[in-house]
Picture 1 (cartoon, one colour):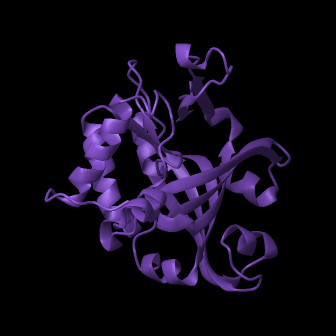
Picture 2 (cartoon, helix red, strand yellow):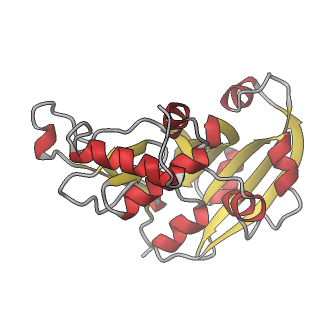
Length: 263
């Protein structure tokens, strides 16, 4: 489809989507085509498409869920859209002061698992960062993080005890962390984890693996985070709206970490 009038292209795209929502071609909670598909359809850049979607979001016609895409907004407001946060943001939301201790920082050959997560060949050199995470000065989690060499060289000289990878890449280099893929499981603490987290060896930990992506689903880093099981819980909120009664589907509206304070 070709844009033809004299308005800026993002305004034309926003107008086309708006017309299709108002005419019923896109219904409440329908997922819109991706930025890439719109870019091909209208022969524009993804930046232009993003500006159009931001316009519609400001008009409360659509809502965007991090890592999932853009959706048509129904008559009911979405109070808690899904968001992708770094460690400092999560702690701040829970009224806790975040800090970190760098335990190790080096270049290593990637294992098969790490290479697979980062879309690399096994044995490719990667930047490896181990950090103990603190909440109000007390151990709450331990991270193992692997970055492809390109991204690793960008962050290696920064203060990784007080800045997150999110902050460095987005604020210093303009590299947007656009989505994340999570894997959640339980794992027993080995001696290394137990020693740093202040728990007994063999005690169950909450393990969260995350692959963070920039645009075009390019992996920026793979991280394994081991939380003390007594200091974290996740709250998931789903909503079965009128539009979803027949299908039985319940869209996920909230996925949020909560950190109970110690007595």
